[in-house]
Length: 297
Image (cartoon, rainbow, N blue to C red):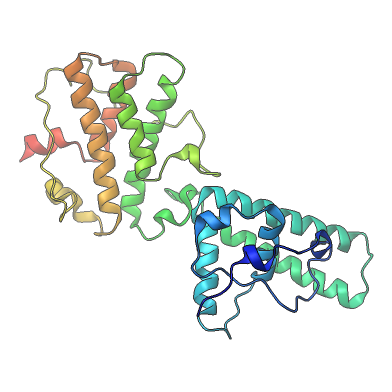
């Protein structure tokens, strides 16, 4: 069953349609099918408000109604740009509703409906929020299916890379190998700067200790052999406490980006000990330093 796009369904709505957003809607705007993120991003502000207002609750009586509703709110929560747009739309709806309630301009029936509508808006707001206290909580639903150890380790390494980037930004001392390292954050969609609730610099260092100056330079650089069918298989028993999941390819990609940065920077003779070595030490601190694992093998 194909549902018409809200781009067409809401195109001719007058501005007055949202002056009393708690009012009953005879023909609610359907959720697009298929649901395309670019289409949602292109929606004018008022049309997005109408789409959200008309779909604050799922229409379970419709075929696939619950599934489409879940997909819509998951998409809004997962995409940083859409999350920001949705928060703005909900905030304006809440402001209009709260003002009407506080100004006491509604009759008893309208007031009751407005208060109920406000509660539903608050529930929608909560759906877009995440538990920011747990590792990668700021990344929304991106990491919700990952096991806690993977989230903790990935966040530590991601923040180490972000901190490295922050330290070098504006200092004119960055190399191409640095840019390759930083690019991994966008590649795995975990750049803190791209998330509305992402942690801000300076990022806390969780390194247990600082390596001896020059210790990395004296060692033979090596990278593990990667098996696409078994991400992190080279790590062996170290992964015993982790639950195999879609986090493994992400974790391996981040680990190898740091290891490759260490190898390239060392071979160039361009090591900046105060900046680079704390980054590389993060691999050791999480137990996934390829150098240590290769030596142990």
